[in-house]
Image (cartoon, rainbow, N blue to C red; front, side, top):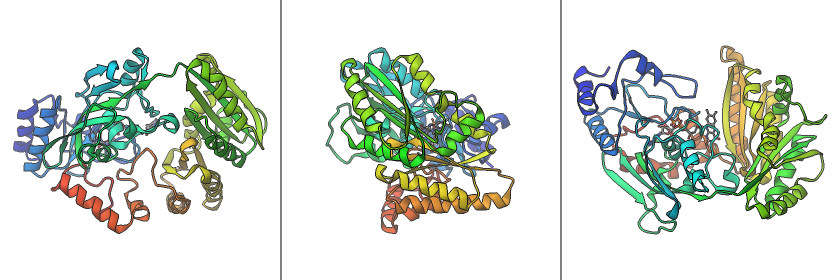
Length: 460
Ligand SMILES: Cc1cc2nc3c(=O)[nH]c(=O)nc-3n(C[C@H](O)[C@H](O)[C@H](O)COP(=O)(O)OP(=O)(O)OC[C@H]3O[C@@H](n4cnc5c(N)ncnc54)[C@H](O)[C@@H]3O)c2cc1C
């Protein structure tokens, strides 16, 4: 319980509207998109960098942990408060500080909603490339902390590849700037790349200078239906081996298609469809026909049932209907999804998909897998009933097997959702003890008292 005198210090710093401990506010910030909740002691709403510095220094003085928060859309519990913590919500630090098309950059505070950056860039025929599915509401600080990605990552890379510089406050209250405003930068250590993806455990990001790229002139979309998971995965390999890199290469497995059919959204899929790829090409208008021809050629092969191509926004929207219905369709299978975000090298994707199919049979669980196949990144959803203890035990055994399989295939635990408090226990299976020791020392350098987002990212 936070002593009233300590709360008063935060109120004196930020004002009563921005340092809150009423029951409704605490309840609202007790969880993120991940199952599980814990009431914080207070919720703080800084409006500028100086506020964040002052909050960290005050929290240090009272040894209070801080849980940073963007929009709370993360699905590994990264923004879930830990016991006794203060939630620091960046939602009021939502100003675009500079938009500079000449230098192809934008400077933002962490609370800016990602789609606002997309819209502004688009107004000058530019593009901020990272496109997480949550972009209508997630905030750029959360994207930076998680190194978020999305379908376009296969061509354009992840958040980390689009950050020129950062301003931040370390866990010991020190202020730091990393990187700059130029597309080349080789001075000092690259703290930008370290902080991006550090899940709020090293420093609080208060400003980011983001790189913009020219917006593509035209887009073409394909929906490709295959007779099996194996033949669809083979097509993914063929696409990624040729010269034209698609700007999206998404996969839906047999169980996804089954869920879409049961949901009544499979209209237009030819009979016998067991797996679907969604592919997109983008670029200058005159280059689109060349890209379409190359991609169609690579998509041909065993098990192909149909290729549908769309060029206009209406055609493209229609092709994506089944994919967009998937998250609703999945909810019909069971009340809870244990959502994994594993990655393997693209050439091993078909082995992973086959192994997941076998795990579903062995552990008697519906497992729905889909995701960013061009990066080898699959969202593997174990569908469960949380009140059924026996089923949950089978699900956890299955999860362990999934992680071991992914690592055996030279893959990694997480492609874009991060580790949070949900996947920490698996980290030592992937990262050896000496490397983990070095990471813990880094954490101590930035945050010697361990007040920044404790219980996240690294195992105890
Ligand atoms: C429907 C849906 C679709 C999604 N699709 C994608 C997708 O396609 N790709 C993808 O990568 N993710 C996706 N996600 C996951 C999630 O949206 C992303 O991880 C996103 O980056 C989180 O942003 P947020 O603002 O909600 O951050 P939060 O969930 O609030 O926080 C995420 C982490 O960042 C830390 N943090 C927040 N702000 C700061 C800051 N300023 N400084 C330091 N640390 C900070 C938090 O402590 C936490 O650890 C999806 C989630 C949902 C619900």
